[in-house]
Image 1 (spheres, one colour):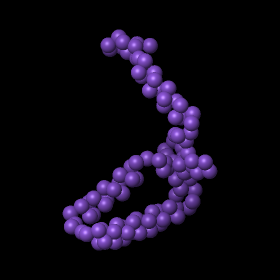
Image 2 (spheres, one colour):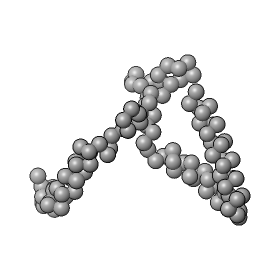
Image 3 (cartoon, rainbow, N blue to C red):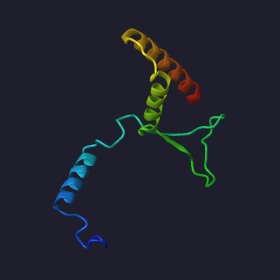
Image 4 (cartoon, helix red, strand yellow):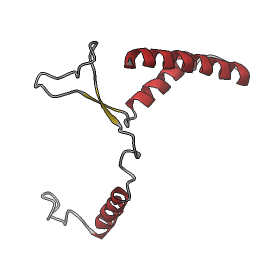
Length: 110
């Protein structure tokens, strides 16, 4: 197969080497859910029933993505970024923020 613009092979030796490495990682299970744990859950409404989109498909939450992690870290920067705190005060502030975050998430996930 050739790339339509430069008319060169779509996969050269280096690209095939990289693709084979990725395939080996997939076959080794590095991109799979941990044993006994699913990284995908069905989103539920207030009644505990699966939420659906306009096409009737169930809405699914993915626990893999970095969006949640990045959102949490951005919140830390916005909240504490301009504060000048020592090590102990920083530890206390982060512990407090983590506690509040965990309560908010537990309420949301009930």
